[in-house]
Image (tube, rainbow, N blue to C red; front, side, top):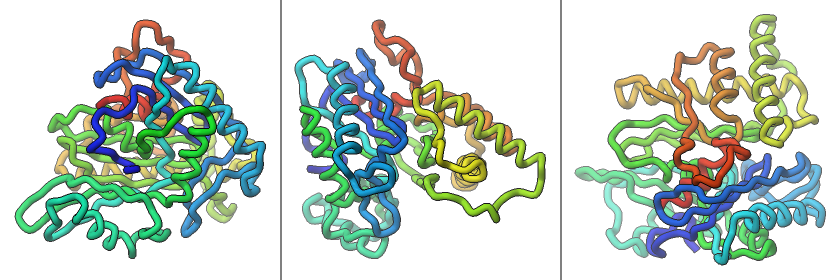
Length: 358
């Protein structure tokens, strides 16, 4: 199964995204991706979704221990509940997984075979020295982003088979069939039109933040920062004003998470939470600088996906003195069907809506 299927036609009319904070599902009737039904189920903090960490290929875990029956059962139950709330007859699902479970790389080639079957081994060979896991034992997909004289730009996506199998098996145990698998930010970007106006996108949540830049359907930047690691106390700021600003940022994050049904991690130290807010702000600052350097213009708007949400991210950036940037949700309310309420925050819907927009 390909991670980014291009030859299988329209993806399923059901989509489900698994994040550390919970599971969200949606249904659309056609490629316009107007969401006719949405559902969300929170996950307990101790239920850890598969992800990558260095050479580790990740596994389901509960309370930091290798996957036991409780953690896996909770994941299966959440996926089943979310999907059954929105499904009609179909059981095929496009599954959206965390960015931390895959690697997305932008590669340059002098030449590449025109046939996909011949080009894939070339891409896989290039990935051997770039991935923290075995490229030969991974699901790999790629897409040509742009071509020029003696230059071909390729987006490659790789996911260890062990992690992919974990996710697929959970969906099957929930009574559904995974038809396509997409990483969160690429799924969200699929919901954008291919206009020439460049866009800066931020996908932030409890465990990570991804920044991306796309112009005319061409991905120019994809960068994921892991927020899961504890930060030593030695990184503390000696400036009380900065300390207070970080606390305000985390308060905004915590408030947003709580309103979304997913409390901020109780086991994280205050310093770790402050550092995470700073990491989010720094990631946005780096992406905005790259945007301006590459495109010779400042981003006019910052589009937000993920569980953090536009309001909380605005607070994080203001407190870190990043900007000014106009921040808005990536998913607009007019993309919700008449019977869909605002019970699910818009940021949660970016991945599933993009997965349905084909």
